Image 1: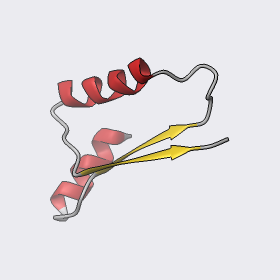
Image 2: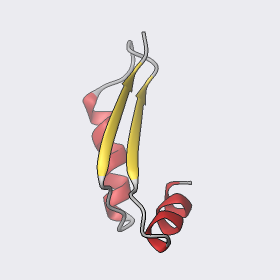
Image 3: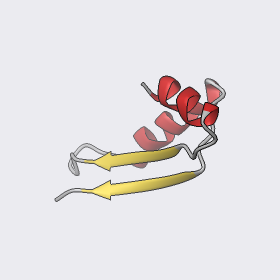
Image 4: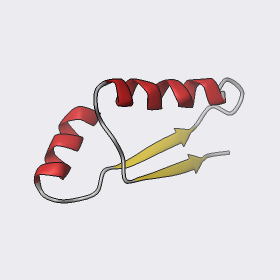
Length: 56
């Protein structure tokens, strides 16, 4: 999904914003977030901004 959105946004001259939803406070760790960022970087994707959503 990220790849398709990235391709669409970059083709339209827009911004790709990476949104991290923290919906499971008990199991979420910084390592999981870093894994997502590492995977996207490995795919050659870059983002213009990051938004964190912390749900209680």
